Amino acid sequence: MDDVVINFDGSCEPRNPGGTMGVGVVMLHRGTEWTASHAIPPSQWPYGQTTNNVAEYLAFIAALDRLMQLGMTGANVEFRGDSMLVIRQMFGRWKIKNGAYAPLAREARLLLRNFSHARGRWIPRHQNHVADKLSNQRTIKINNRQGGSLPAGHNHKSAGNRGAIQHLGHLVQADPGRQPDRASQPRRDTCPEVRT
Image 1 (cartoon, helix red, strand yellow):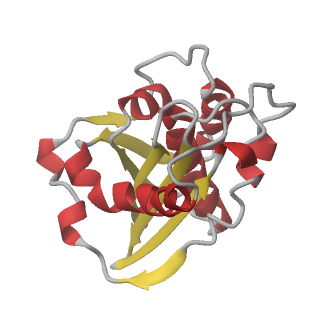
Image 2 (tube, rainbow, N blue to C red):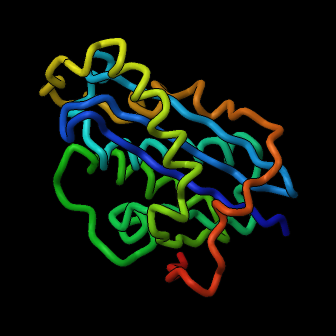
């Protein structure tokens, strides 16, 4: 069985809520690291308010979608993130409550059911630095172009959350080819693990 490690991160800058969301995903498989990143200004997010939690879920969903595209639902997958909310909600510890992230959390939980050997591991931010950098790099560029002044986020509700996920369709076409950054991979014995 293939072993896959996914690091994911989301950000919302320069303010949360209402800033530009950034998404970063790193996939390590058979010694090759694939990375993907995307930024979404509030003016381009018609599904509710932009928040850090929404961005974290978008990163997690992008990783799930990428694995499904590659036919890797039967792989032994470890999802690593510094979002306690995503890790605990997706791997059985916390309930999904109300919030801008809730429709994405429910969608992510449905997608996760396709994976027979998935587990989640919360890691501190400093051990998730590659995904963190990816989630922030494009938001910084957008915010600098806008002089740090961002329009207010939309307040209307989504008609369906699949549109939000399809909004990131090009994100899951990850960039292949980098050699793994071993420093971004935490030691197994230092992080709590949650299994499905």
